[in-house]
Image (cartoon, rainbow, N blue to C red):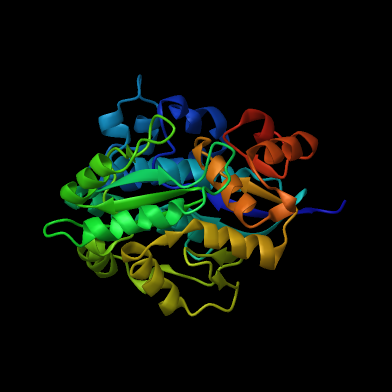
Length: 345
């Protein structure tokens, strides 16, 4: 049987929400040994275990969205999804991820082992939470059919630069997320943007709960602490290609591990993360048959689709066009959607 060739995408923060409570227990009963190791690691640090967070009686936003908790939950759910992909049916060409999903991608691709991945995710998530420098908001530059609004991205960026130039205001691009831009800054910068930009689709600009100013220079202290705590010796040659947040391709068996460590705990923390560029590299250079988005949740699927529309993959030209194509052949498979998960595991 000919295997389908896929690129796997790992989600970042904000993907384990109320609907995902209990997802690890429901879907990954066969991963109890690895989950026990994750739990023991966090318990030794005095942190609530992944099992306890996932098995809580109710979802509590103030607890489950904290960086020190959300990062470990999302990492475990995503890595376990990756391990569930049917390798008899699929050839994995590369792994990429959005923001925190880069750390997960490193573990999926073998550059970190499972416990090393948890150590990186947990350490960086905890540092972010302890310092909680700044925040993030999200704003679209596409219309409701996921087509770019002429001039809208330039207007967003011009306003961002204007605000960032004001005394006491910090605002910068954090993530290029399909048809939306994630902006990050301090309280003054974010508040000015919210006041001065028009409301789009009745909900944007949308502030992201418990998110720091990821991927900006405000995170330089976190990057410095991360490099001090996480040695390059954690990293090994990947066995699957990796695509980072610049769109750069790291080939298995041929990586400069010191450079990979430096990027992961340097540039990736303090400079914008371009998920769209990563997906452009995947689509144009690797030419997969399909993309698979790991769980938890389903929120990243739309952003991946918007990026693929932007790059003209499979001739997709808008949301309706994408939906018609999906009804004929599911080329974008989200493991957080039961019907699409069944195609993958």
